[in-house]
Amino acid sequence: MGLREYMNDILEAVVTTAKGMRITARYGVDPKEEVTLQYPEERWEVPERFRGFLHNDVKKCTACTMCVKVCPVDCISLESVRGADKKMVLASYDINIGRCMYCGLCVEVCPPKSLTHTGGYEKASTDRGELILHFIEEDAAEVKARVARQVAEAAAKAAEAAKAAEAAKAAEAPEAADPSSEAGKAAGGDPKPAKEEPKE
Amino acid sequence: MEALTLSLVKAVPALGAAPLWAVSLLLMVASGVVVLVFALTFEGVGSLVLRKVAGDIQARIGPNRVGPNGILQFLADGVKLVLKEDIVPAKADALLFKLAPYLVFVGSFAAFVVVPFGVGLSAADLNIGIYYVMAVTSLVVIGVLLAGWASNNKWALLGGMRAAAQIVSYEIPVGMALIPAVLIAGSLSLQDIVRSQGGLFGLFGWNLFHNPFTFFSFFLYFTAAQAETNQTPFDLPEAESELVSGYNVEYSGIRFGLFFLAEFGDMFIVAALATACFLGGWNVPFIRAEALPGIWGSLLSLGVFLGKAFAMVLVMMWVRWTLPRLRVDQLMRMSWKYLVPLTFVNLLGVSLWLLVFDGKGIPELIASLAG
Ligand code: SF4
Ligand code: SF4
Image 1 (cartoon, helix red, strand yellow):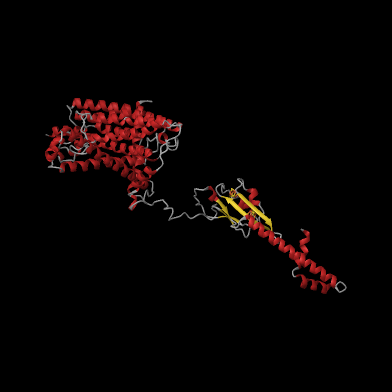
Image 2: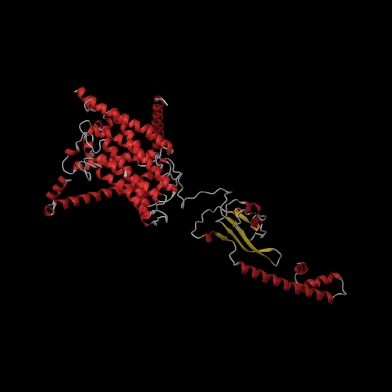
């Protein structure tokens, strides 16, 4: 490296430093707009498709477990029981947002679109347990017990209805088919569950 | 000091009964406390200003929560640092670990003692002032290296080694760039150096304009000194991105705070030395502060000196937010390949100038030509 190059290096260093300092001085003297967001008061408006925390609209959820199966990190857990009307009833639905990586797969697969992302992103906590979101407030065991009771009641009702229908049938056996069905309806209330119950 | 002691005894007759050494001791302690309070205040306010300047330059706001416009932020920070848990890593060398921040802080604070704040206003006017500053600030190297070593953490150790290499390397150009001022004044005392820049030439009596070589010396000094005190763009020892902040990773609470304070203290020392050696110190153009009656001379010179020094501190902050950090090899190259040779050439130039022109600066030469 010749002396010329050496001197050029020094010159370049001085010139570029001066240039940079001119730019920063301009900002320092005249700090145009601030880009700072005064966070707790001002907030960023989240975009429409922002993947924030998950929310499950439990009324719509069919407990199909698709979301549980698809989640790569196993952060969704649910318990369900079969209800009286043969549909699955959620006993508990928990999402551990401490583990969730917001990939959105569960939302993609949810058939009734009950699982959605919200715009929420603040959930600092000193306790990891607080990061598990419970979407069903009731205790899972209680829900199960309640559903079981309902199922039992429905079954009892259905059995009664079936008996009544049988009795009516036996009593009015010689008569025509048309009035028999009408009598059966009057005696057993709703015949539908009674008809479907035996299939189970 | 002796004169001051005697005048104090004269002013307060009750002290006459006490032995002279006791009064001297009292004065020493008092001036030490004053300087310490000044240093701490400067360090606190400096950290706030630094962040405000950074905010402006980077189109941010900076601290604005504590107190009106955030001006009490540094107090809140201080309280936080004091209250934070003081952690010593289990396998660290506890004694050295605890000692290191004090060494760094003392190294930086001790230099305040000789700063010529005004006419006769310095805690001690040592006749080896500059030499003392250079010597005492080297304590920082030991502290930093100790912190890195005692932490028992490889990042801290690497950070400490880097810091030591950097500080030691840059000490040479810093010293070499200051010597022209010593040559011109013919004294190592900072007060004498400041006094040598007074006179009737006003602004042009300053060493900065003494001759072309001193002009360059100032910039060389300023660059090297920024590096020696680990200011950005030379803040490799900190290097939060590569070394997770280097030698002070393991420190928490007030121990970390001491490193932090020392850094700001160093900033002021660099600015103060630049002011004293090149920018005329407490000299006001065309006014002889020494000749003013009573306390006014001292006050005026104090204000002027602080004004100049704070302006230099602002320039350092300005540089800090302008330039990107150097890589470690670039840093070493800059010291040994550019700054060291250039400061030597400059020193040679200044010496020759003084020899040829019989110690006269450019303004004096022009004046003698005209007259
Ligand atoms: S967003 Fe992804 S990680 Fe989170 S619960 Fe849904 S599938 Fe699991
Ligand atoms: S995929 Fe949707 S419907 Fe199915 S269990 Fe999950 S949330 Fe419920």
